[in-house]
Amino acid sequence: MLEAASWAASANNEQPWEFVYALKSTPGFDTIWNCLMPGNQPWNKHAAGFIVTIARKTFTANGNPNANAEHDSGIATGYLLLQAASMDIYTHPMGGVDKAKLSAELKLTEDQKMLCVISFGYLDDAEKLEEPFKGRELSARVRKPVSEIAKEL
Ligand SMILES: Cc1cc2nc3c(=O)[nH]c(=O)nc-3n(C[C@H](O)[C@H](O)[C@H](O)COP(=O)(O)O)c2cc1C
Image 1 (cartoon, protein in one colour):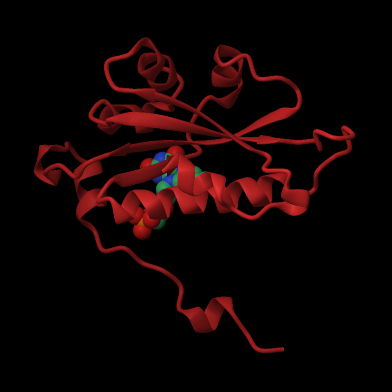
Image 2: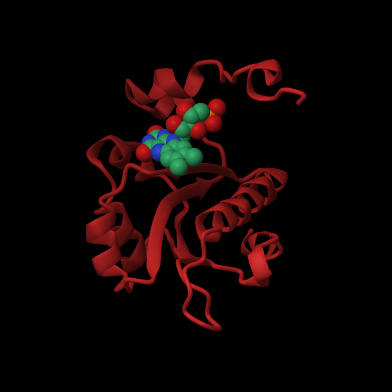
């Protein structure tokens, strides 16, 4: 999954993405889990692991701001999610994280912006979940039609 992310395109080939991961039953897993918002904590007890996505805000070569850093890190994250899906690994990106607390735990610098935390694992039985998580898991996935998000100029 991380290898797939590493092949994303980026401005100047800067590769501004950084990832910190932790697997279940490790102190790192508990550190990240403790920084999730309360609504994200119950169902994430069962995750196999977490990946924190981070964007480096400036160019390594000259320290200038990289306006594309978050965009490019998003591409890398998308590749990571697709690679996981191709391996039947289920993922769930979360912005519902106390980012200030987790950034401090990870000792991130001013140059590093935390984007989200992705939990991942193999599919389990939704019946094991309590509400409202069970209902959310079992409801149909919805998206805007392509005609609403794209137009010919
Ligand atoms: C940046 C980002 C932040 C998200 N934050 C959360 C979150 O904190 N908690 C959560 O349950 N889902 C979160 N999601 C998942 C979305 O809610 C989910 O993708 C959306 O509801 C559509 O569901 P689906 O992708 O399963 O079809 C997040 C997704 C992204 C991309």
